[in-house]
Amino acid sequence: MSTRTPQFINSVAEKAADLVAVKAVAFLRDQPVLTIAALAAAASMFAVPPSAAYLEYLDVRVLGLLFCLMLCVSGLQRANLFSFIASKFLSGERSVRFVSLVLVLLCFFSSMFVTNDVALIALVPFTLFLFTVARQAERIALVVVLQTLAANLGSMVTPIGNPQNLFLFAHFESDLVPFMLVLAPYAVLSLVLLVACSVALGKPGRMKAQLDPASSKLQTKPAVAFVLLFIVAALTVAKVIPLLPAMALIAIGALVFDRGAFRKVDYFLLLTFVCFFVFSGNLANIPWLQQVLSDLMGQAPFAASLVASQFISNVPSAVLLAPFTTDWQQLLLGVDIGGLGTPVASLASLISLELYRRARVGSTSRFLLLFAVLNIAFLAANIGLYLLLS
Image 1 (cartoon, helix red, strand yellow):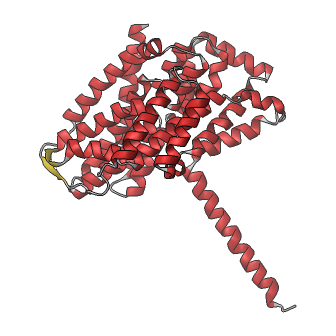
Image 2 (cartoon, rainbow, N blue to C red):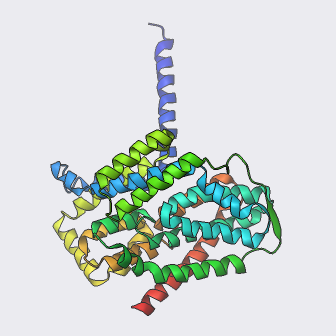
Image 3 (cartoon, one colour):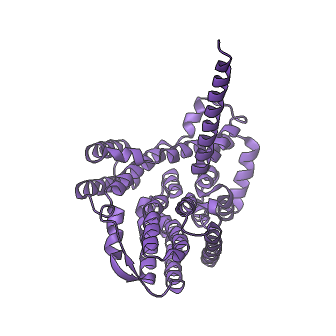
């Protein structure tokens, strides 16, 4: 054997190891919540060894509903529905304040139906493009921060607005109207504050929106089809249509009208939920910890869920704490209002931050400063309303 063979093998092995390391770092950066959830689930297995009982942890209805909603929204994105709607509002020459306000309000209202993270994934890149070509890059950080707040606050009104709402709605078998009424006052306050901030902090002057015709051209047939499929998904959430027939209909519809929609479903989010279910299920089977969480949720469910959201995000907080309380209203308020505050309090906030950072349109530190100031202000206002109503 040539003496160069071991050197060649070592070189290939080193390059392969470097490639794996690069891929691993990229995955950790792109999927921080999944990584944390997987590590937490793995750690909990030392306390409660894996068994067939793990299957009982999984909320199959939540996973099925989440898949249906994501598939429908994926199809709507690929049909350019969101870009088409935005272009109708913003084409031509407009005031900077008007454009900023419309983009913020689109996030607020669309997030009620397509979830907060999807609203931001659809509209933040549109905002980045629009303000860059209009030479208004200095306004992007403020608008994106307000869009992030709008998506987190608008999404809390409906059961399908964000993952934690969907989970809690299904877990506690809530009715639609009482569920929405719990959060309605906070949504109204937040809407007023968002409009005030968009107008007061907006820059005077005008800008011309130069839109890309290809990206804002509506694909009518798939758009109509996926709107109808989305209605089926929403009726399934409301328990009007059974889950299994709805899943079959939506999957068949996606195959017929745009099978590419399956590729844009966030399967990592589904896997994240599986990890959260395993983690929370295992914790619920540790007697001393079960007692601690029960006492905590019995005494201050709103405060406990709000504080937990600041450190582990509001989705895992909802999954973790739901088994330890029957006061779903306080838990719901805690995790939804708790989506404000730190960047990790809501997955949607991390999405906005990453989209802004990758676009390289301004200082990330300035973005984080604006994010901190406005989030603290909105969090304080909502907590104040909670104390007033309590």
